[in-house]
Amino acid sequence: MLRHKGVWIVAEQTKGELHPVSLELLGEGRKVADSLGEDLCAVLLGQDIEALVDTLAHYGANKVYLVEHDLLAQYTTDAYTLVLAGLVRKYKPLIVILGATPNGQDLAARFAARLRTSFASDCIELRVNSQAKPEVIRPAYGDKVYTTVVSCSGPPLVVTIRPGIIGLDQPDESLVFTHGDYCLPNIIIEGRELSGVIDWDYAGLADPYADFASCVWSMGYNYGLEETAERWEPYFFMVYGLEDVDVGNLAYYRKLMDLFP
Image 1: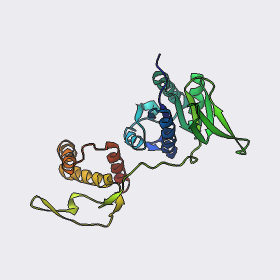
Image 2: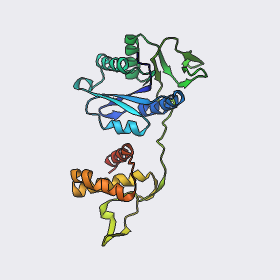
Image 3: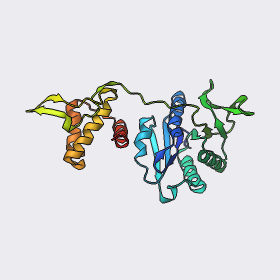
Image 4: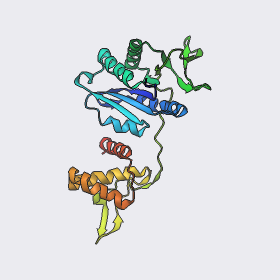
């Protein structure tokens, strides 16, 4: 029999936009997963939402279970419960965490009942106790009393956590001085050597991948996406000396460029 393993968060999205609580849950889930020595996984349901996978990975998910279907384009209790319960039965996580939003509360209650497992709603903290057991803190009596809840049944433990309580853990970024718009029109080449860079209006401290994303976008614009992906992007990182490219981080800054052209 397979043992239960992994800490899961269920990412909530609407029309291809992640709900902020999804990224908050990744921060809380990471602490619990590290304490238990488990992977942190995200579940993403919807339609035409593959682009969100890179964001979830950037914010700490070791693995993302992506399920796309026309019937998942909008949240419905029956469809989402059927898919999520099926995933949980197949892969057997230790903990499943959802945001305590209207949809999250509805989904958590329904699929926990279907699996006949423990459910703690509207929590403000999830942690691991001295016996290496997950426990949750939840308010009661109008937030005047706080109780600690430990699951007495077997896994998975289903938990919903209030949005805005945890806060957002920003990705770890090593800041360097960047140009801010490092693209081909701003680079001066003399012969085969870089002789200058112009237009420093957006220069400042940032993740170096901000400049990498700008450069890769510029190559795609000038040389075509296919040729850039096959030839120029690998060549750029080879010459730069970066052997292990963080594709999630690169995609994250590409998305930022799309939002703030």
